[in-house]
Image 1 (tube, rainbow, N blue to C red):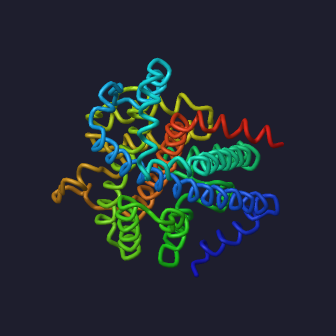
Image 2 (cartoon, helix red, strand yellow):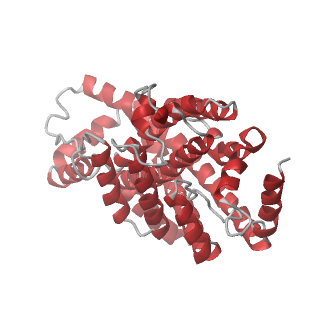
Length: 375
């Protein structure tokens, strides 16, 4: 084992595995498992409900083709909910007629029966999510010293982004540890460090088709880095970065306002700026600023000294030295992707909860009212 890496691992054990930090990590894991369990339960009922509604609504329309002709037609989700409520209030006779005819469709009756379970599972999921989010905020405020944050910021300015950390897991404050040592740590033992930080993404339960493709690209990217094919690895990473940047920018689109079509990366970054500014999370605000600053350098038209140049790699400028990728650049780009993924997941999870809350708010109010009555 390389002496410097061995030294880093020893210092990591001594400085970053204190009883307080280990206790925090254990509690984070416990709360994270609860979130996954509650999300699985909610998804199970939601998927079943969607399936029943799709079949049941189609049968209802086939049986009564004119039944919905007076219903408002909207494409903004907030307007759809508001329009449905207004219709129920202002057209009570027609609304009652629709409800009576819905009772003739077995799938819609079955959907009604599972609504209390769906509502309960959603409420428990958002409570679990809120508890985990609060824990992360509390631990980052308590465990990350101002000196540690300053060191993270100086590393981030050089392209080594560590804002994915949920506790201070690297001994970056030690005077004997340099940025090159941290990069070598991620490369050591067949990229074990890199595999560990990506393990949460690679071990997602029941990933959708899109995530399965991303997982395949991440696995291939790590193997390419491990075998020294840094240029090929970064091509994969640029695709992953573009996908995550678009995902983050599209959060909340079509919920309260008409969906925007972003023409370029600058417009996407400006949209993410707005979303980040609207939340009360200093950690995410700092992380996004650092991520965005380095991302701008990577995708700049004019190459930035010491920063990997996307256009030269993606467009195959084989006559330029800029196409040669160093291992340090591959690691930095990997962490840029991982940290951007942190932002996009954060925004999309909150947007999903907000969207579902619009749909299930009346049911949740009734559920909570019932809980209060039973207590």
